[in-house]
Every structure is written in structure tokens, then in C-alpha cells.
Image (tube, rainbow, N blue to C red; front, side):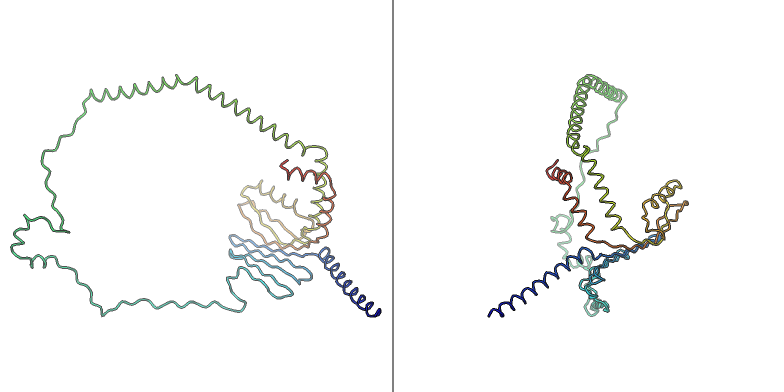
Length: 330
């Protein structure tokens, strides 16, 4: 009995140890197995094409995206098997689209007789004589246009404005203009006073906003905050060094239309280019505005670097204090 219990405990312990080892192995693989990425972009005149591929665990899991002719296509693979496709418009690999059969055009029936137009002249001939004679005196039938009766009376001749009337109109306009000028100068002191009061209020509001901004920004301008900024910059450089591309190849043709600005832009590109871009060439174009290139880059990302930076920030008291101020609205 005792041997049976010990055997069961032994098997259970072995299973628990195997599960624990698998969990530790999975955790170590997540931390230290890098996520590799490859990117490629080409641009020439108005044509643009780009491709991005991310893989993990020797391409056991890979995600690829491509941009071509204004369309984005994404493909997800697990162990080399495609499990998800997006942007392919429902197409399957190796299949073609079937053209939809359009219905035949509608043909008119030639046997159907056309409707002849109504002959008004024939209708008038078929009317009886007594109806034709009384047509002028009878009231109009429904649908028959009515004749307009001439308007009696002579048209009134247009009135002609004489010189005294024109002179009076001009004098009235001049008088109204002078009145508006006098009203403007009468109300000018009040307008100036209101403008000065509005300027004083605006200056007070600006001063209050400035004081409020300085009060809120005071915790971020202390010596401890500046030391924190230096540490954050150091962490950012560390992540950029480990997560940045390890290899950059290709060329870039750059032109802004102005020779001095083109030289400055090319110098800035060389300044920001990492050390991995030894096989990358920048071609300045001083004749016009152009942006063309063919760029390929590779790199990898390890989660352990990000975990290290997160742990250092969690231990930083000044960072936690500043984060609390930001969350609390400063």
C-alpha cells in the first residue's frame, strides 16, 4: 500500500516538474528568442511598393504584409500553414474569379403595334355643325385653353424725374452721410473706453493663464525632474541600439528644388542613419524636387531588453511620482 502511494506521488511529481519545466522554457523563449523583422520599400515617380515580414521562433509564427497598387494584403502563418488572409478580396490560392453572366439585353417586341398619335384635325371635322357654330359663344371645355381678354385702358406713360428731384435726392444722400459721420465721432469715446476695458481684461486673463501654466509646470522643471529626463533618454538610446535595424541597404534619391535645403536634408539623413547603414547611399538631386529610393533593412527585437527597462522604471521613485502627477491631472 505504501509503495503504491509513493509510486503515485512519484508520477505526480514528475508530471508537475515537466509542466514547470515547460513553463520556464516558454518564458525563456519569450524573453530571449528574438522577433526578427524585414522591411523593404521601393518608390519611383508615382509608383510605391512596400513589404514587411515579422517572424518568431525560426519562422514558426510569421506575419507578412505587403502594399502594392494601393492595396494592403496581410498573411498569417503558423508552422508554414496559412491561417489568415486579409485584403485578398475572398480569393483562394490557385483559384480564379468567375465572370458573372450578364442577362441578355431586352429586345422590343416587333409584333406589338405602335400607338398612332391623335389627330386633332380629324376630331374637329367629326364635330357637328351646331357645335362648330356655337364654339365661339360657348364656355371652354375642360382641358381646352382659354383665350386671354384684352386689357382695357391706355398704358400710363413713364414718369420722368426732373433736375430738381435729382438734386434733392443727392442732397438727402449727402445729409445722411454727414449724419453717420457725426454719429460715429459722437460714439467714438465710448468705443475707445470699451476697447481699453476689453484689452485690460484680455491682459489679466493672459497673466492668469501664464501663472497657472507656470504653477503646473513647476514640478517638471526641478533638478530631480531634469535628472529623470536624462535617465529616460539613456533608456531610449538603449532600446534604440537593441531594437534598431542591424543592416540597411539600398539608395535614396532626394531633392527639394533648392540646392541649400537639399544639402541640409541629405546631411540630416546621414546624421540620423545608424552605423548599420554602411551599404546605404544618398543621392542628392540639386536640379528639382524628387523623392525616389530602394531601401531594405533587417533587425530583431528581444523582450528581455524591454523587461529590463520596465523594471528600472518601476524602481525609479521620481518616475512613479511624476506618473502619478500626470494621472491626477498634475
